[in-house]
Length: 246
Image 1: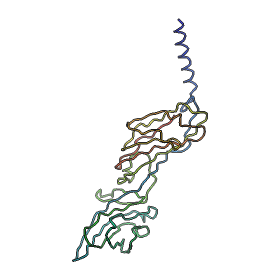
Image 2 (image 1 turned 90 degrees about the horizontal axis):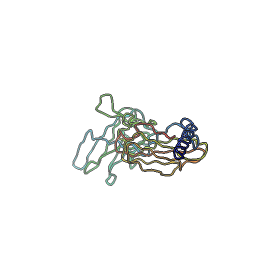
Image 3 (image 1 turned 90 degrees about the vertical axis):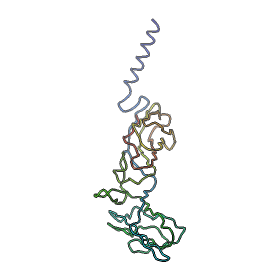
Image 4 (image 1 turned 30 degrees about the vertical axis):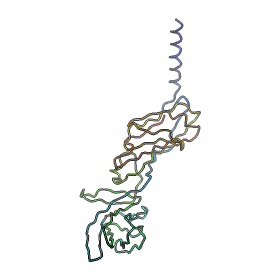
């Protein structure tokens, strides 16, 4: 009989605790998101360019590369990346670049032509900067444009088909009361690695596609910052759904 009373009392306590927990919060203290989900790209876009024409003389090779832009890329900080161990003369839209490979200020809307003139094997050439790459209407060519703030989800449809860096998803939460049990849930993610940080402290290396853990021990009264870092190798990586902390 005493065991039955003990079990009944235990269930009553659990019921009382669950009823005392406010919706979307925790019995250890109310947790409220105080900022929208912020998506931050950590690293540059790298857009490989193909040779569109090639000519040779006895001692000189001239290679021309062509790309299309929606704007001047003035805020993208674009530079040309190629093997600089050999001496190549570089022009962008007819403007000599000297030894500089930064092309801010010479990129124009529409077609842009880069010309390399030198000797030996033609080096691979990439345009690197904080820009987006989108597929043109013909479905065959690509257009670069100054980067826009990305949203959660797949990156390729947002003009980040060539992005292969790291993405940080960040949100601030306000905790009233002490710590305790607060569950982080990541419904699904895509990439090669996923790291969770709370208030700048690494708390988990995620290996499962769906993930949850108690991050309460890392929270403190006041504002808390939750960051999820995802690294991938193609434009389809990233959080496919939002995460939650309650």
